Length: 385
Ligand code: SAH
Image (tube, rainbow, N blue to C red; front, side, top):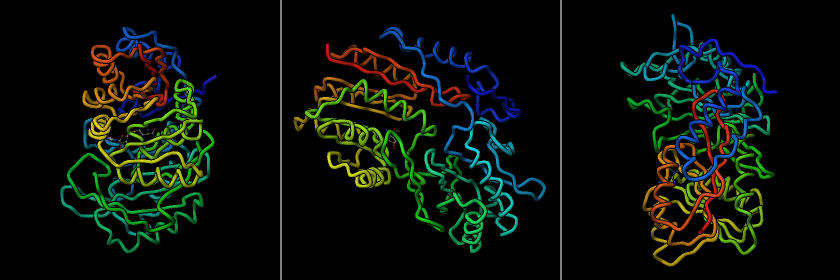
């Protein structure tokens, strides 16, 4: 039986569409959305529900502000710049709520003020927290106006003392007029700990740093990766590509699940560094990674005559490109496993594949990674006709 949930802020914050519904109703509306975009290609399997529907979010981003001189943290109301204070969010890991509460208190003690975007005064703009699902470890990033905040290290040490699972605190500068919490290429300065924490998924350890992509619901992500591996049915003579590989989760789980050789491709250099480190931590020797735009890399490698037997791809919400899919076809894989967080772009990419490539979808499996929110993840497998 899923746990009960009720959010008093749902109407004001706008972050979640389903949080005050029964979970069965949420799953039904997500299933209908999947069917709308995907059922013309293949029967859509029932959604895999999340093992927990509250407290599952291990990544939390909060806006830091002030209300009548007191520190507050919260979220901008959807589509606005109005800060809605949030004392605790039912979707978030309890440790993140405790960290935010401690930061509100410590900011006052160490005279760290909220950043005022219009005037360019103050220090702290956002707080990013990542908690490990497996280990009792959390990483905190203070998104600030400058590295020159002398009391920040004192705040970091006090935070660790109060909540010993805070293993790392760093500063990242953001003074741009942007809604992005961390702009691309922003500089980071670690002021406490090592700058990363560890999590464990599908029997492997993964290093999570401030800016690399890592699934927000790791327990359900592990189920997603297991489904992807079952569909891939890897053998020692398989050569595997994992495109949009992030910190190497899929590539390394594939490498440890019996694949011969695995290559991950990812545009973010920090994520690739994490992926290489993750390979070393887990003693994996049959995986390597390239920093590149996935479409350009695929096109170039296809031109050089590279083949692969299994292709995984897990692109951002915008989906794959036609260039990517055309090159994928030329690499002639036996199976393609596509992990998508957007059924609409997935439907678009499937239309392209059905029109131009000799592959057909055999399994479409939605996985609920984001209970309460409108998002849904899908993994599907195509094989050659
Ligand atoms: N498979 C990983 C990450 C998926 S998220 C996991 O499950 O954790 C999508 C990833 O695509 C991100 O790491 C992002 O940095 C990367 N990305 C975005 N655009 C890209 C591009 N054009 N080429 C290669 N990687 C890209």
